[in-house]
Amino acid sequence: MTSASGDTTSECLFCRIVAGELPADVVASTERAVAFRDIDPKAPLHVLVVPREHHGDIAQLAAADPELLGEVVALADEVAGEQADGQFRLVFNSGPRAGQSVFHVHGHVLGGTQLGWTPA
Ligand code: AMP
Image 1 (tube, rainbow, N blue to C red):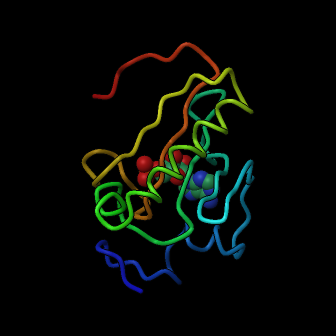
Image 2 (image 1 turned 120 degrees about the vertical axis):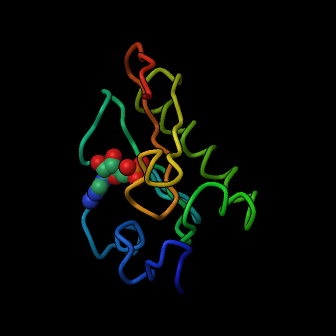
């Protein structure tokens, strides 16, 4: 399968993590989504939530399978409840200029502290 970014699933970093080919600190998972700690955390809680299936970004996922997007959001909520106080920010960078560097849709679940707001 080839994504809009040109990655094939065999080359996609997060497809390889989901498949268990690369190590990750998995904190929760469902049949269709996985949550694992970001390797370079920007907050006390910084977990990535991804669908197991490859979609390039949040808009592509929403168009292809809105129910799966809902499952990814629900997993973020579950992780924030288990790993922090239940309050969280969920960030989906979409496109390189927005900061996206891995082109398998992922939500950054950020929390565990009072968050600031300096996106630019
Ligand atoms: P983005 O820049 O929005 O595409 O986010 C990609 C995120 O993936 C960054 O926050 C990276 O720190 C994180 N990341 C990259 N490689 C890994 C990895 N092997 N395991 C966990 N997180 C990773």
